[in-house]
Amino acid sequence: MTTGTPSLRAKARPADRIFAGSTIVAGSLILAALAAVAVFLVAQSIPALVADPAELKGSPSSFWAYVGPLAFGTVWAALLALIMALPLSLGIALFISHYAPRRVAQGLGYVIDLLAAVPSVVFGLWGIKVLAPAVTPLYGWLVDNLGWIPLFAPPVSGTGRTILTVAIVLAVMIIPIITAITREVFLQTPVLHEEAALALGATRWEMIQMAVLPFGRPGIISAAMLGLGRPSARPWWSPWCSRPRPSSRSCSRVRRTPRPSPATSP
Image 1 (cartoon, helix red, strand yellow):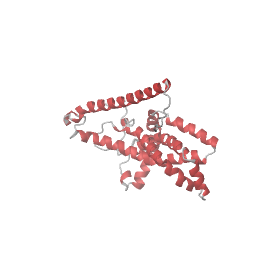
Image 2: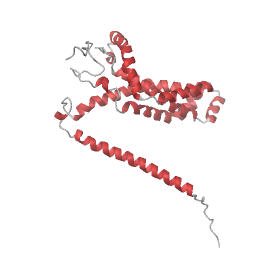
Image 3: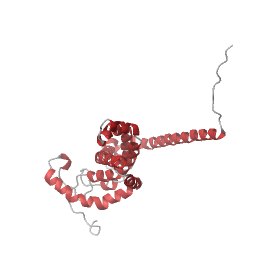
């Protein structure tokens, strides 16, 4: 007569049951909240999707003709910002994680984390008050010397509030976020992989190419997507480009005409 081996089970303690139940409840509440937000947004957008074009601001031909330029401007500015920010963020993260001394890396890490916590409106105000007036002469030089390129085609903006300025502000805004995430990802690279690459005769940069970057590729993609979350949200730069203009020019092409002062304007 053979007897079966009794199954071994860990003794369930009340604290384990409470913790498991609380995690399930918390996860369910988060999913329910996200589903409620999705339902609310869809329900609120239905009137705009089926509205008569005559009821929309500016009397566009259709709803998509009204939303299309706004969506394109947001995506275009976010893409330009990502092109400028991602290489700089990766370089800073690699310097902090593999090149800088420990004390310097620790201080730079604190600074990066603090910059990532700065509100978006601060960057927007800096772009409006400081960056836009400062880059206006640069835009004039670009139009005079590189006007044959479509991106720098005339007329030049007289205020500096262009899509390129917005992209620069967005790049400054998302660099700390991407840097903080990729730095932590690079620090999680297995030390044995790095030591193996160095033992095979690789230089430090070759070790980064063979061990660090392949290991951190998913983290780099995730950091880029999280960085895009800021410019893809509510356009904090909308006051730059949402003012009614006499013509259908885009935000990046504004006539160089003097603005009337508030005292003389009707």
